[in-house]
Length: 142
Image (cartoon, rainbow, N blue to C red; front, top):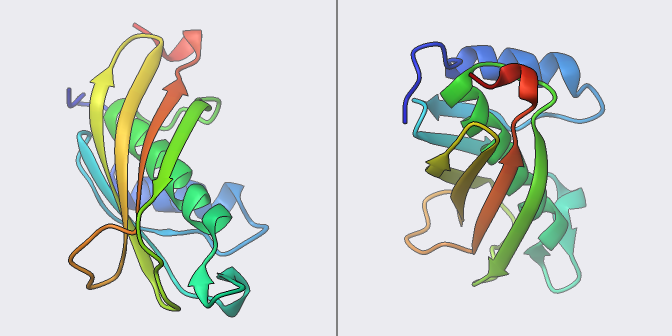
């Protein structure tokens, strides 16, 4: 699955920081074309009633992790877009940093499919599990 011209964690981080200035981007800790680890620092605005990290926060992190995974596999392709995101919320993560680990399941010419586990940093069990599909634009295909 790994492609030689995939982007590094640093290149992905620079792209996210430059192109998504509206909020603090997640931190790309690791990227190798088949797996990425992305961490999101806790902010009080992420908490929903009941004292848990909100679903939209975890969905956004899952989507960001898959975007980073696509970039790590094929290079920076800004117009790669989410076509499907299915998430199961498994446990209530309390206030604190959360991390997503994404793994490529299939990388084709038109679509990339991956799975994402989201956990509170240091937790043994996932708080959420997502399956995410990205469409790869025709000009990025070979």
